[in-house]
Amino acid sequence: MRTRTLAVVVLLVALVLAGVVSRFASSDPDGLTKVSENHGFAGTGTTHHSVLGGYDSLSGVIGVLLVLALAGGLTYALRRRRRDDERV
Image (cartoon, rainbow, N blue to C red; front, side, top):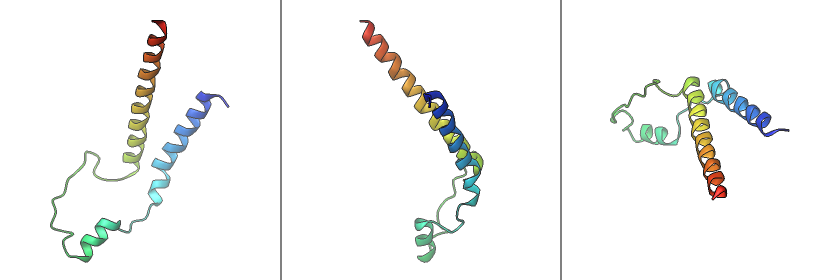
């Protein structure tokens, strides 16, 4: 399998997982939320609103694309640097 084909397949799988499968995630509170509820201080903190309004499929897709952009940019920069070093 070619590298480009593999990269596209991995990207598509990540986007499907982030965008579709995440809708079926558990709605039960995680460990920290559960502890704060059990000890009665769950409602005392301040709420921080994200630009996207919370965790949802769109957040997952944007996260996948951001990580892809960062990893791709880093890979490009390192490859370019190695090629420049080889020319000297």
